[in-house]
Amino acid sequence: MVRIYIDPGHGGTDPGAVANGLQEKDVTLAISLKIRDLLQQYQAVQIRLSRSMDRTLTLNQRTHDANVWGADYLISVHLNAGGGTGYEDFIYDLLSDSSSTAQKQDVMHEEIIKKSNMNDRGKKKANFHMLRESNMSAILTENGFIDDPNNAARLKTDVFLEDIAQGHVNGLVRIFHLQKANTTPEGGIGVSEGGEITKTN
Image 1 (tube, rainbow, N blue to C red):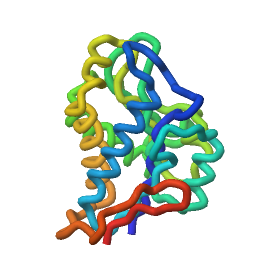
Image 2 (spheres, rainbow, N blue to C red; image 1 turned 90 degrees about the horizontal axis):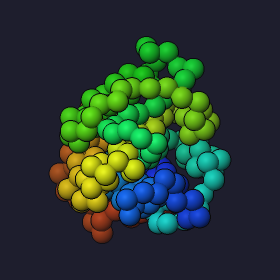
Image 3 (cartoon, rainbow, N blue to C red; image 1 turned 135 degrees about the vertical axis):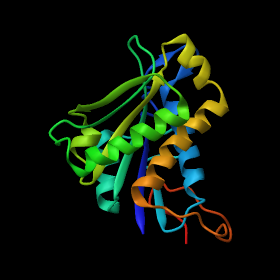
Image 4 (spheres, rainbow, N blue to C red; image 1 turned 60 degrees about the vertical axis):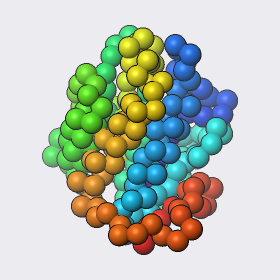
């Protein structure tokens, strides 16, 4: 059973970046919920979200939750800002290019770029809390620039958010060799937050 922890960046009193009629916290949640919903189609996977609604969480709360739960992989979903366009992702900067986390980044990056058709800003490393304080392999994805009019216009469409989410899931399927479930578990799959675990059989 593979445990995937999904962290929609920001939330509650922290909107993240704000531009072009969008708040980062809303878009990251929408993408993360779509990732969860798509992962429900696969077997032998448990999914947990740091939040499934607009609520305030500290960075420490997020990594503590992932660590206590025993996640195998953490994905922190964000949007970029500051003048630019396209997609990039980050792993912890003290990890080598041959590390397991870097190898996972290679796959995630390739699949998200392929599905989203965003400008490729490259695979990067940084000393971000979500990457440094998590006990498992972790990646932080920056899914377009909220302050770029063209990126923002796409981020307002459900189709584009679906493509971003599908790219994340395609990467996870490759990394963890996930197999499609034959049937949806009876009663569906619940939201994984605040102690609730989303799982497939």
